[in-house]
Image (cartoon, rainbow, N blue to C red; front, side, top):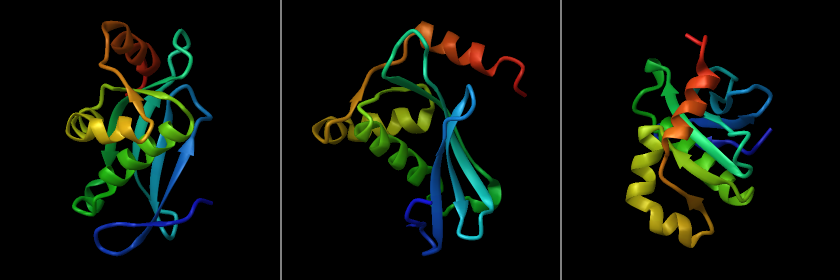
Length: 130
């Protein structure tokens, strides 16, 4: 299990990567294993080395602890480590890259604006998922 991180309350949380499904996710859980949130993505089959982040969610009982920011930061850092181009459809990812994109690219990260085909890829991947 990866090293724990600390949320705004000082509590330990764990962020893990789940790539076992069509829709992958970075998930955050409390130190006791309680799921707290996720940042969902799809890897488009036609664009090797790209990852479309389209939804980030934290359970209401964990609001205010900074978990969404931890998820976004870990996903972006992991994208740098894996040389993946980020496509930010999720508003949280888009805002983070709008505000800190220069620093992200200076650290070796790559991202590009979403295109209509990216939205179609997300729609296809999430079809039937309610």
